[in-house]
Amino acid sequence: MTRTKPPFRADHVGSILRSAAIKEARARRESGAITAAQLKEIEDREIEKIIRKQEEIGLKLATDGEYRRSWWHFDFFGMLEGVEIYEIDHGIQFQGVQTKPLSIRVTGKIGFNHHPMLEHFKFLKAHTRVVPKMTIPSPTVMHFRLEPGAVLKSAYPDRDAIFDDLAAAYQQAVRAFYDAGCRYLQFDDTAWAYLCSKEELRKAKDRGLDVDHLQETYTRTINKALEAKPADMVITTHVCRGNFRSTFISSGGYEPVAESLLAKCKYDGYFLEYDTDRAGGFEPLRYLPKGNKLVVLGLVTSKSGTLEKKDDVKRRIDEATKYVALDQLALSPQCGFASTEEGNVLAEDEQWAKLKMIVDLSKEVWG
Image (cartoon, rainbow, N blue to C red):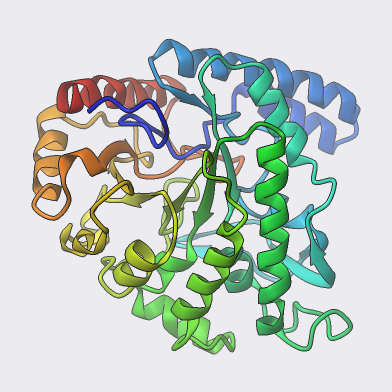
């Protein structure tokens, strides 16, 4: 049952706690104390360190930890043609805490050309001996996150008019990352988890979104983007309920979206959060088609440093096999460790201990 292609039996979502050197350098760059070139030198050095660490603990993949980003999503979106990051009067509301008051708006035709994150990937690929994994936000997130009025009338008539160009831009992105040597790409996605939450659906409706048809529209947009995927490229998704300073946004099991997400979206694999009862049971996994698709079970939380008991994790994997064959399952943390540069509330050594345990557990479960 050992896998030689992604997703791997022991995998991870992508982001890694920013090192002290990265945090200090970014603060100094913000104050004008160092140049962009000096910041990049520090980022390069620190990224090389975490690449080595991922290799040393036995992972078959490595990411750059999203060390060059402030956000898991806005940085990527803000580098698209026709999209910019701007300041608003509120942040994204998590349980008891808000993010910085920033969002995105569409000012022109959306496109993917000369995107800086291609260079981020090339650096990763050039410095790892294992499979380099690139993470970008899903196109659905961009649409779901747009505030009312955030699409300028000079660009598109309304928010729903962006879907065709958005899908086309992601087709460009898939081809560009492939041409850069990427064979493992992940679309990170909060929208599907929010569609499982009655509270988040209400908020989306208040923002003017057509919540009754979002599943169909999102499935169509994702599949259009995935049409550009070559046969030897793996594209997965991670479905997230919110991850900021160890807090969350939404609750609710996958049942409302499981058929659309697992059976109709043409992803190769799904990283699904299962670290708390907010995610519900494993029953929705029955919609996963038999065959090559994988579900990567996020049974190890990235929100605290407490190390799970191996037997507890094994028991839950066993529970999942009532609905999915063991050879269509894998293991990872429930989310990244730093979806924003602030990071979750745990220590770096606790983070690495969790990833090492996942590697060890995967060998015990899958051989």
